[in-house]
Image 1 (cartoon, rainbow, N blue to C red):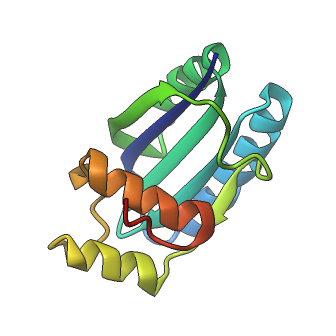
Image 2 (spheres, rainbow, N blue to C red):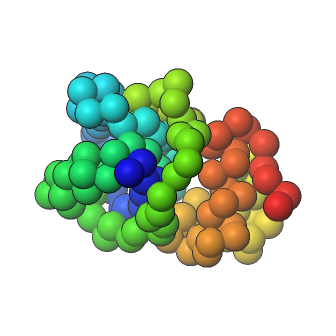
Length: 140
């Protein structure tokens, strides 16, 4: 069964090493995800990571256990887990979306002046994901 798992976590590294950590995370994720047919997206801003992963349930759950042990982040909050009919990131082993004004403005519209993925509810998470899928918010 193909599932989608979205989570957020807080960085543990200092500001000087975050760029190296992001490069390392993306390199490791792209390698692991390619080998396990996992697709997804990573967004980082204001000390928080947001990641959405899609793939076979057993591989996603194996990756989640690996992520829980990664010392580069803590305060993992699972935001969404569920079955998928089709993947949204099929062209990406791990898409990286850089900090941008559309996402910053979206979080401001929710009343957050910083990126606060741990404050997303089901509806606001789906709208946020639409930015990551194709750069446009979903109004559904």
